[in-house]
Image (tube, rainbow, N blue to C red; front, side, top):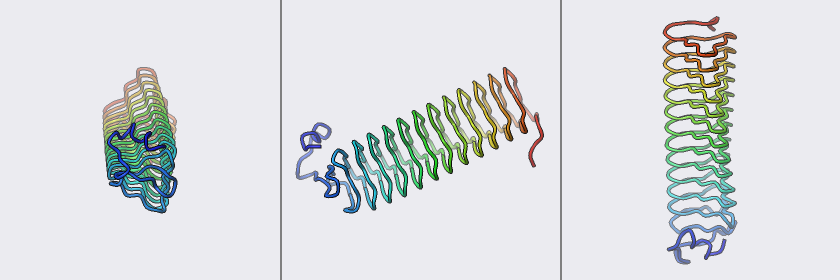
Length: 255
């Protein structure tokens, strides 16, 4: 990137307020801090009060700005942006057109890619991946080997962990928990204090909310509604326009 190219994005840039990083040749605003050991590629930009340290690499057309921190062995590349007070560290990767902002954190071996957004106070860590057009925000946690993809949204204080998959147009919000090998997809919604675990699947336009629990290999589909203190386990099938509520129990509950 030439200095003239830089000025198209930062019209007030001067050679007195910007410099090229010796390891990679990318532009760094003098207010930012970039370690000599870090890499800033020739098309990348680090600005504001951002910090890039350790063996972190910022490359491609990536932007790191605001008060963001990229450290450890983290990678931010292609057209990804990291901003606000966000932190990307350890061995995490942020790439594609992904955006990590607010006070969010992406760390350990997590990946955020494609057009995904991680914002506000959300944390993505472990070996988890957020991809597609997925959004993770609020105080949501995505960790271990969980996958959030396509147009899925995880928000509020929701937790997605284990080998769980949230995809399609699914929504997981409130204080909901999705873990184990559970799958939430299509237009399903999990919210309130609901828990989906084991190898359970919730799909179609099904909703699980309140204090409901779905375990085992249960499948909730169609326009089903499961709420209250309902418990569904084993290989139970709930489909169509079925409503399961109150203290109803379907299937053999695990100890």
